[in-house]
Length: 247
Image (cartoon, rainbow, N blue to C red; front, side, top):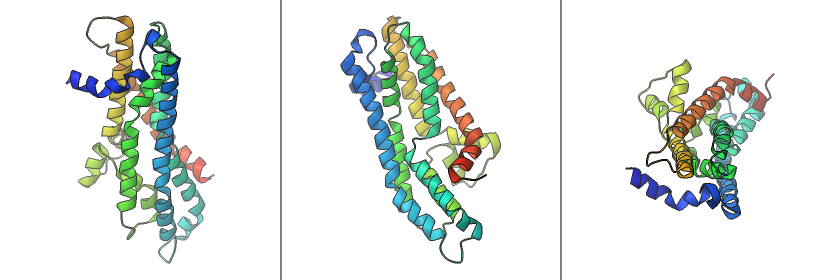
């Protein structure tokens, strides 16, 4: 199992080679990889905007549209644009936390800070899978019967995790349980696992300490993701008011 996982990551390890091996070229590759990832995530999100904005306009046209929804037309459109063009905010916050803690911790082992950047770039690659899944859901979902609230949450229907399973069986948990269900998805766990693996390889290869990978990078990645998702859930109402221009 471990050797199979390593073989999948081996072609990418040049992005985070520790110590002296992280030369100028390697550092540049790490930055370019992170920038390319963000550009692809944004591009895939933007590809769903024409369909989403068209569906929003259709749901706000005709007698079925409420006067309240009509007033919020501009705010709902701004929310869709921000949601599709920005990278998923919990992952942005989690990556910042991981870099803030891991970079100083690994600096004492002669690991370049840009090596951590390379790990974050490679580990966030599953976000492309998420954006592709969301894009497919948006374009194949029929327009019949949709209301404005359905359109704003249409991309979120691609949820390969606990929330998706609960929605499939008709369950609707609330409060803290709903936040946990949304966070416990395959994409999030995939990203966290790659971050933990990459940082553990950096720490292990720099210290040359036996064959076992250290556990603290995995704990750091999981904790950062949990804290980021909890903060996002708590602050989301304020983010929504800001984006939609609500008082």
